[in-house]
Image (cartoon, rainbow, N blue to C red; front, side):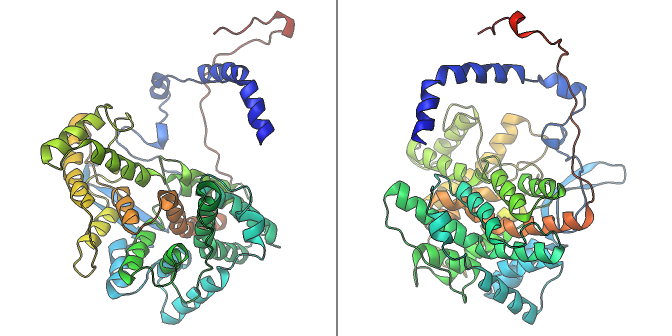
Length: 461
């Protein structure tokens, strides 16, 4: 790696020139997208997604349609296998149970399990959490990544080498592989995080193997903190976050990636590694990190939490004069939801639930002010055609900080949950899709003639 870095440094100018040529030749003007009726992000001006598939796994709604085709904004709805997520939460967390395992069963098997079926499913997950012998030494503790998501992708691809049926696409085999990944994702994430702390931060290496009698949420907190270092309320709050992140329609970027890669006929490990790469992107899985960083920036520049002070600074952020100068208030707005994000509503309800004895920090007052002010400011500034919904990322960053979870683990926790949805979509794609997903692109570049090498002119700039 040292030789690589030296070579890059010595040839920086040459690489810069080539990169400049690449950026200039690939720029496509906005009017060409309009001309060819190509929707950026596969969404039209009204936010409607281009339909690319069918699914029975989940459903999300933000509008209803009248008989004459008029779209009416509604409070956001999210269903897992036709069941509203609020009912799933109420059936588990509000009754003192952990619900992520039940949710994973529902997504994979299409029905709610009875008591024996759920016990058997939890037994299988517990038995599959153990990593292969020497995996920690040979994979996790070698070439430790700065980013835990990259470390997890490396681990997933490495698990291919330990699977005697890695290429077998029989549904029973793929289901088994998916169960293994659902089970061991918490271990991969936390062990990779501990390796990161040891190699990059000089902290003590603390490796705790998961306990078979703990739920997924409990095991995450146990592996991070140790025995008796977290409360039941904390574990249930994390469990709810896992349930809400487990699935969100086939159109989100990482799930669509799973289905696109699956349609090529590749193995489970390659498909899930690709999904991890998608989720790592800050436009997808990293939004709650930006929320936390934004709130820290507001705290550093706002002397008190008065309405005027907070509102004026939010306006500066929207104008690109503060924080990261991108003109965005993070945690606000969603590609689909208009009036509300039902997942955010669930988390807000839990934070205010008197049955959960959460001690809110002074930050919570600031979060509440931003929650109330930001949607109105954004709608006024951007002239938004639909409502500005406060999304789930606005609250998960606060919750993870409250649970003493490091920012490096925010997106990996998202992955720990979403692997359940990815697995269900991979299986659904394998069962129903016989063709590779191959969208069309319109070629808009100019035609050229081939010029002999000795007759070519040097590049300008």
